Image 1 (tube, rainbow, N blue to C red):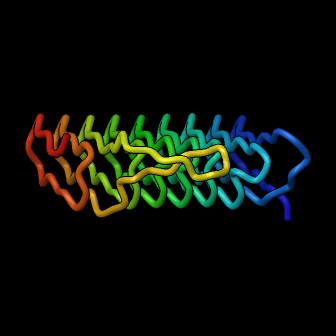
Image 2 (tube, one colour):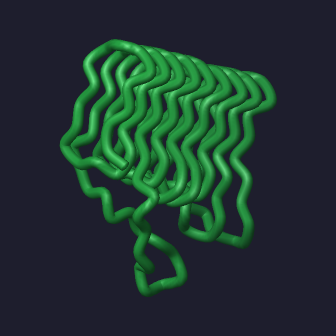
Length: 168
């Protein structure tokens, strides 16, 4: 079990402690996988530039620019695009392309393309181990569009449009 950096420029896998959990960076430049104990095991960045995976297991970033998956966003993925963020206990989410899209404290959600779209649930509960889990559990989607938001609303979809807000 070891981490690998294959090709690229200034890519890095950092650790806090003596844990050797497999993570991988392939090609690209200035991509970082940060591991805090066991929290970034089996995470991968393939290509792209200035991407970050921090404290998230089995996370993937493929060919993106300045995107990040952080803080317990296990099983999440970003494919392409620029400046996309999945953060704060957002498990099993995906962002497919687009610019400046964000998923925070939400699970099993997807943003496909578009710009400045946002999915969140501000409903958190203690996981009993010093962390938190999102209470918004599934099926939220934003597809394309610009500046759309889904807030505290399960099983919602926005198909295009601009400045549309659901939930809250």
